[in-house]
Amino acid sequence: MISVTGISKSFGDKKVLDDISFSVEDGEIFGLLGPSGAGKTTLIRVLTGQLRFEEGEAMVMGKRVTQLTGSDKKQFGVMMDDFGLYERLSCYQNLRVFADIFGVSDAAIREVLSEVKLQDAEKKAVSKLSKGMKERLRLARALLSRPKVLFLDEPTSGLDPQTSSEIHEIIKKRKDAGTIIFLTTHNMTEAEKLCDHLVLLNEGHIVESGAPKELCLRYDHQKRIEVEKKDGEVISMEVDPKSVDTTAEKIADLLRSGHLETIHSKEPNLETVFMELTGRELEV
Ligand SMILES: Nc1ncnc2c1ncn2[C@@H]1O[C@H](COP(=O)(O)OP(=O)(O)OP(=O)(O)O)[C@@H](O)[C@H]1O
Ligand SMILES: [Mg+2]
Image: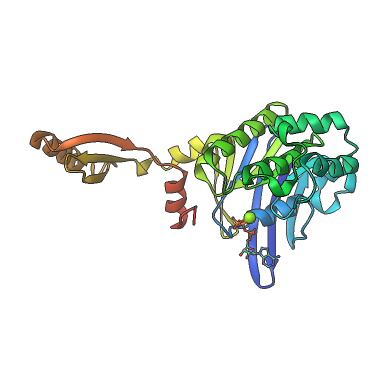
């Protein structure tokens, strides 16, 4: 459905995408995970035909992205920061503007408003909406034409956990209805919960890819044990084969002395995987 081969893109002297290749299969939620400046938005702009690039090839739904026509683009739903809303118009009126472009019925507008739980706010002006409501309206606009492919650029960035998980549910339902979802995030919890396949992007390079669980297992050597002493001190210990005897001895000492309060193992997560690969944190 989406295939990207050797894409490179520069702004002036600065290469912001460097030899990017991956493919997105039917029926999956594909996530591009990377910190600020990694090149996530740039890649979405390339894939949606908004931005030219120097090298490589990208195909979406069997077409080169450089040759997408207006009617091809109508099959995409795009949610990006710079696609603003009309502040003085109501939720309904905002969607009406796009419905006219897409030839979408009134019934479809009401359906999508209730899908994002804005049915009671349809007459409210955008300027009076909360941040979370605005984000849901932007999502509604992307969903309006029942697109085959949804491109979502950081769909929950800056939102509270409750609104984020509502947005996750909407995205999952569209996936179940057969829509391909391509999203970007710098939030590893979101990536873990939502995505079937991930590409980890750093400074324009792919540093890893795979299913979230698979990626964490690949870096399982990072597994650690954390013990908390009764005085509140937390000690983190390695459990790789080299250090296992020392670690076991330290724990045994703590047990004997009666100072041990809790003990649990810390599995690697996407944040630790990213840190090992790049030396950088995801959320900066
Ligand atoms: N139009 C532009 N002109 C020049 N440089 C640009 C332009 N757009 C992006 N860049 C640069 O390209 C790099 C990647 O930017 P991009 O917006 O794709 O990152 P991102 O991963 O989306 O970051 P964020 O998480 O902050 O949204 C950055 O160094 C940015 O400064
Ligand atoms: Mg961005």
